[in-house]
Image (tube, rainbow, N blue to C red):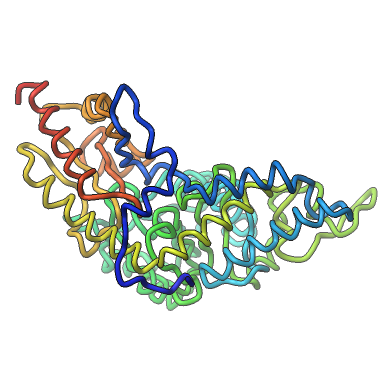
Length: 414
């Protein structure tokens, strides 16, 4: 089945059965995993691919001429081709990084220090993950640039009139999350890109919360830079992806230097390999990258439109059920503007206590500032509890969450 194929039905039980960890019981209770926004669990196919790379095909890539080395290289580069195709890019534009954090830092250091100077503006949003704020803060402090933030609407969406006002100042870059990891807001990237390009600004998109949950076509979006991370898209940790327009990558100097990214090294100077290897210094996490290619194949085999539809139904159901819990505040927009997660707070109970009590029933949710402290300040809360969903999430698991929240209220006698 291709990535664009949509099955007539979505068998969530069959999907969940492919995840060995979901069969675990702790203290006699089956795991209810509602923390895919932090890291996704891995289906058997991905575990098998990672095991095979290390057990049967392990050799350093791009170096040896013997059979094992050729196998490892072919598996690695084959994964790059499939990942690039999955997001609508070309292999030469698809860079393997450690994670999306490194992808954003690569752009900030390599493109940013060549193109952003004193007095220039970088536009961000209050809903960004720290990974899409701190690198730009460091760049701005170093070169004398300034940061400006788009306003939010009352329901947690971007105020595009505010964006237009900032674009009128002629910024060099707009950096924006495709989907907020706290509010769940699905941002209108095509519209943001169109307006930004008309004002002469480039656009970097943090796609960590988007690629696992529906189709992404970087060319159709019009983005200049697009990053995502492997472990949130059912792949291993330690590998991420930066896609960028070829002409930008060609003009950017290397981010890291060392083996495998060089063309020729002399005592005084060096030349670089062509794309994409110019930005992949040292031994890349080739086993993990190969398994990420398998994760992408697995997700495409489910049908990404079908996954998005299923998760939209789960999210809408969760919003309805959460609204039944007395004293509970939901943050973010309505279901039609939201990705596959919900952040909330329960009056009189710290989010960490909510998560701790739920965890005693093996209901796995995230509590904290979610690496989004500026947004927490904007919301006026120190933290929230977050439930985030995946292709394997069922309505029964949402029901377990609701029952657990009623149990939290009983513990605190609310």
